[in-house]
Length: 139
Image (cartoon, rainbow, N blue to C red):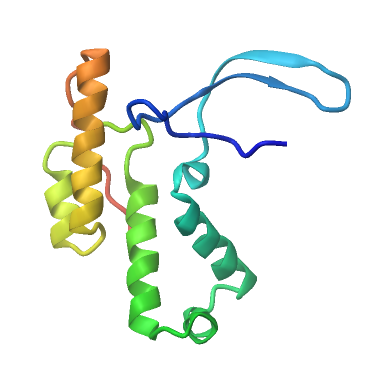
């Protein structure tokens, strides 16, 4: 079975599933199904998350396994969390990209990617940028 493709090879926009079927009985459901946030991560980030879970969430174990420092692993995890906190539809929240970069939740590279994706989404759909600020709550 092929790997699920979640990014359009033509424009880098997110793809959505429109049909799913049961392997056992063949029942088919058609509609527009949201791709889970984890599946929207790049392959190397998804692999990192799987390894993180296999190490019981131990950043120390991840650093030892990968031969890197704890701060390097922590930084990568923070970057991935930033990607998961981003809107899944590719829209860009007003001002939140700069806030995320300033707060260390998003790298400059990821911010550029998010802005480009939002511009592409607006160009294709004609929809303006959303302003739905969200913040993670401590706890």
